[in-house]
Amino acid sequence: GENVEQHPSTLSVQEGDSAVIKCTYSDSASNYFPWYKQELGKGPQLIIDIRSNVGEKKDQRIAVTLNKTAKHFSLHITETQPEDSAVYFCAASKGGSYIPTFGRGTSLIVHP
Amino acid sequence: EADIYQTPRYLVIGTGKKITLECSQTMGHDKMYWYQQDPGMELHLIHYSYGVNSTEKGDLSSESTVSRIRTEHFPLTLESARPSHTSQYLCASSSPQGAGEKLFFGSGTQLSVL
Image (tube, rainbow over all chains, first blue to last red; front, top):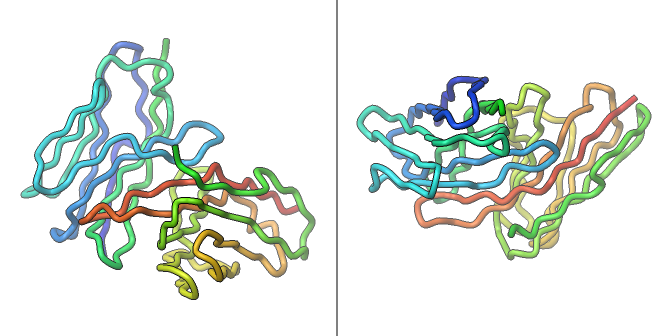
């Protein structure tokens, strides 16, 4: 089955810095890669996603890049703000009856 | 905004009690999931369903059971709660995105078994 590795497990940055979270996947058939943000006391919420036919996608301060050959994808957050502090999960899936596989999560702490 | 609801938000019960965690969604999604989230953040899939009358066990062995009698409702039951069941339980449903699944999560139930 699919295996998703996520690094780092904890990331501490100063407000205004950039943050990068990386994930690798094992199943070359995976073709949909969402990122979820979980704030304290809430369930994870989708913030951005990318499909295998796209190399990069951007939405304001967040962007995701995908390297299909190397089977890795990354989340980039620029100009971090304290409200970006949360746990971030990457996931990989391939549709049909397959269940998405999640990474272990990254706790991002943005210091004011 | 996702329309998936979990009740209760918090539950403290004694060992041996039977409990049911409720999960409902109004989006008409066929697929639904239950995850157990440990304090270390990781999400463990314990049950999922492809639709009415479909239930499957997930990657993490669990003593809980689920049912799917209606599309919108996916309750999780523990027949006899134990302290080892203390955890955060997250319910989700998904919308197919062509090649993948976009998940919508509820706010979770924090269960404490004394």
